[in-house]
Length: 291
Length: 85
Image (spheres, each protein chain N blue to C red):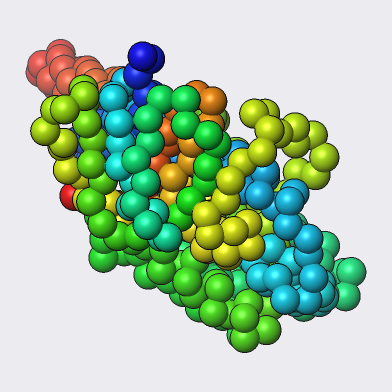
């Protein structure tokens, strides 16, 4: 049985842990609201972009001169997995789930005989990927020195990817991130970003002839990198909201567990204190009777 | 005459969505004034000022946009810009 002092120290330490998890939970809740608002505010742009992309892509014929972002490199040998994780921990299984999803895909691609490379966004996924696939991390895009990954970061990533695909470093790119369903549910999601996945057919042009200035090809050429940026930006925002949601849930659980632990420890503490008092009394009474 | 429905969208948010009289869009191949019931057009824009006339003859409001494109369809004018100032 632990001594009274040990129990007391233990209770104090669990209490201070609980304070930390409680604070982190409240911070996450506040940040979640902001992240959610940002994700929602970005939606009109993404929707409009997608609408324009699909209507344009169906008009332009794909030949060897068309952009690699649209047509791909013509091969499917090397796959680049862009894995977006968070920079901070204390968010439950959030990062682990994304990395797991990426690993499942990687294993499948390797089994099919493809080459797999990784492009890491955020700090938390690197150690795991490095352990399983050493030397296959092409680049780590560091987001830890900015407060919240924004459009500038998305643009930089998109430019990076474009340069790499032009240089032939990979053929197909997949983007992994945590899709935000609710504060409780975050869904690890994979999305093919290069070449762009165009929903074929089903494009009915309303309003008849649209005039294009300069022309379809040139607009498309300008739009493709922008569309890639938008997709990455959307993923980063979703990731941000998911991270905060996961963090909030995890910290809520931790706070509750700490509370239970404190209750149990307090009971044990009181019991041992009572036992000590009783023993002392018995000793005194027994001593008095012996006289 | 009906007013033109004008939307300006950036990646961060929907900047404005309102009915105006006319918008002068700085297209890559030249400025174009868009009034209500304009023919469908899609155009890339250059980094320049967007002029918004809330009513006929009013002093235009200037919004400078960077990178993006403009689309006119039966619903009105939508400008997607990467950044505004």
